[in-house]
Length: 73
Image (cartoon, rainbow, N blue to C red; front, top):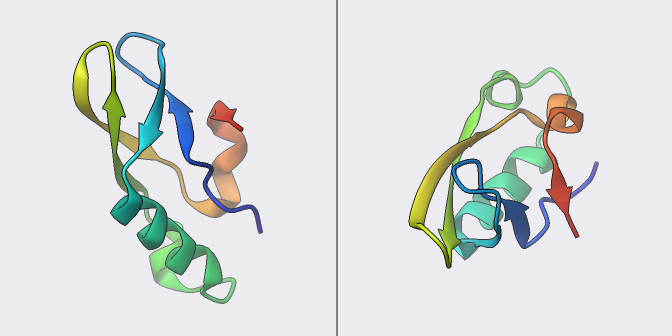
């Protein structure tokens, strides 16, 4: 299972921005859950520190659907 990287593209303005550390920790905990666990099926909110437009909330899809996201490494 892939881990969420430290940077994602901002959904508001398109700038590459940093994911807050607490959000990365929560994402990694969800990824560590066994397949079929109900919490893995839920979407997760992530806060990103965008240098262009401030802190934005954006939905990150469940680990099984992460190909729907543009992941920035």
